[in-house]
Image (cartoon, rainbow, N blue to C red; front, side, top):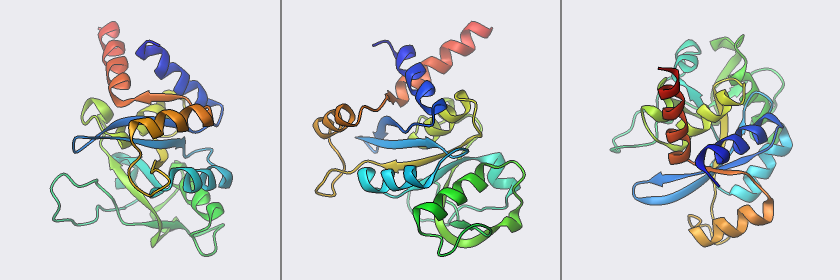
Amino acid sequence: MAQAERVRKAVEALRRGETVVVVGNLHGVEVATLVRDAETVEAKDINYMALYGRGLVSCAVRADRLDRLDIPLICTNKVNATPFCVSVDAKEGTTTGISAHDRAVTARVLADPNTRPQDLNRPGHLFPIRVEMEGVQGHPGLAEAAVDLAVLAGRAPVAVTCPILAEDGEVADHRFLEAFIREQGLAVVSVADLLEYLKAQVAEAI
């Protein structure tokens, strides 16, 4: 399947409110993450990610939105660290903050253009990941791809992500991912596919 078709299938799946898989490279290791747009995410989607992804459920958020919501980066001494920000919970509509319902509410609040800084408690149970405005064209990462896909699907520039781990808790290898994607019937796209697709769109526009 051509890269453009893989991108289109992933975007169409997101438009239908489905979860997709994005594959990329992290520190020389092939990794994959589950992705769902945050604007329409529901508790069942968060629960699915936690159950089948097994990694940390986070929220990739474009930088302009984080700045407007006054959500800063977490200080780190790690080189090339994932740009995690201070964790948040939605103030309204949540209780403990950790339930699938509460994290879905928080993700939707992050995606809502009318949300104000005072609508969020800090710290919370959902970690935003800062994605700069250029997306994968500025940094070809999984979080950037998640946000770019959400935007292509006509959603807010916010996406819920969860890395996929194998049943033994280790990072899922290629064989596990192939079987998992086939069994779950998920659309899959790579960061490289998306980058080439967006570059081609820019070239056609010139």
